[in-house]
Amino acid sequence: MKANVTQVMVDEHELILRMIALVEHNTALLEAGNFRNWQFYLDAVDFIRSFADHFHHAKEEEVLFSELVKNGMPEKQSPIEAMHMEHDQGRAHVRAMEEAAQKALAGETGQAAIIAEHAKGYAELLRGHIEKENDILYPLAERILPEDVREGMLTAYEVAEARMPGLKAKYQKLVEEYEQQV
Ligand SMILES: [Fe+2]
Ligand SMILES: [Fe+2]
Image (tube, rainbow, N blue to C red; front, side, top):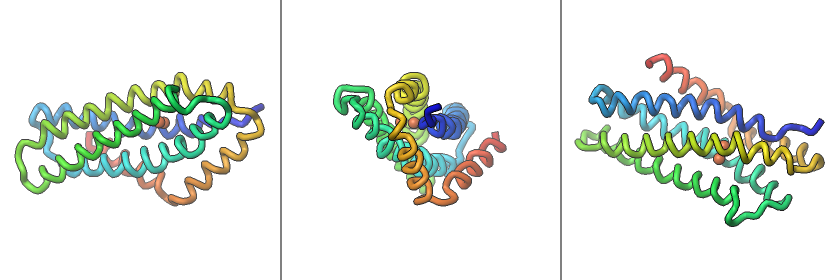
């Protein structure tokens, strides 16, 4: 049996989706005028940057996507290009959310609507993105990647994770703490 090189990514999506659910829940309260915990948004930004982007998207971009390109998937006008573009769109929402949350924390008024716009924009983008990866790109990867590159990919994932010891546990705990406040 071929070693599976995408299940680890699907598992990471689960934690990202739990944070997205928190963002959606708290943003609905924010829009109703019942949520003023600006620090939550800064923690969500930290989670997204460290866990979703640095930990997860880095493995996708450096290992999985690059292996797909080496094995014949075009880099341009392809699912790979679309996924890269969505990673970048996500980063733009996160920057805007962070800026507004910092201003709100410093006492500037009028930031809630900006935070809500980018929080909802990010949540919607990432839900669609994860769905495309789980349902289309990852199954495609499992079909086309040859046997002999898979062990190397799993090792490359491990090397990437070893660069960030304790990171997964830290962000799992952060999500659990906010889930308990819901
Ligand atoms: Fe992705
Ligand atoms: Fe992903």
